[in-house]
Image 1 (tube, rainbow, N blue to C red):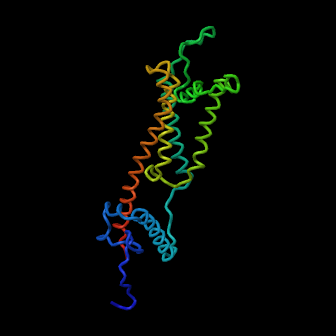
Image 2 (cartoon, helix red, strand yellow; image 1 turned 90 degrees about the vertical axis):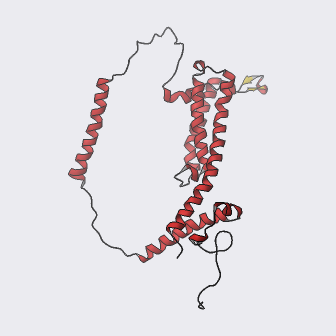
Image 3 (cartoon, rainbow, N blue to C red; image 1 turned 90 degrees about the horizontal axis):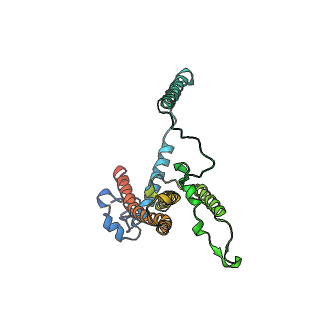
Length: 255
């Protein structure tokens, strides 16, 4: 043992301050759960080690000129793009000629249809217009409502659209998988379920469910789906990060 060799056995699995433990000494899942800093420490070391190695490679590398293979915009890329555009335009024309849309008889302005529905992709907005049962009667106004049910539905549409528009500004993370951010993934699941339930509410006169039960399920199912998805993704995240670190140590053994 020379003088410049450190005899201290450094560990990073809860017992020391080293960088990476050897492959044969990597703790098991149960051992990591039993220690205080196991998973969080390993996750930090994973990104720190990757950053340091990338920085070292950038410092050691030198610029080498090389030829870049590619095709010019004219005529190669232009001809290819025109071919693709012509193909899709031709398919649209063929479909329009062979499968024309069905046109019903002209509407009769003197009668009202039994069921009035918008296009299917607007069911959710149509359902928000039917939230009159949530419009409270204020005792200060003598039991009158602050706004009409129609105005209340319009305000509900503005609230939902505003929330959808502000979510990208609240979630500025760089996660690429739902398991990496369980909270926002569960918010997305709850939003999708709410869009489905509020769409069903818009056609409640065609659904064989009691109106009171349907009103409750419209708001309870998204909450339940959000909590379940959060719990599942939260438990999957620990196993995912453990496998990520294990693959990292296997591919990049300590120097």
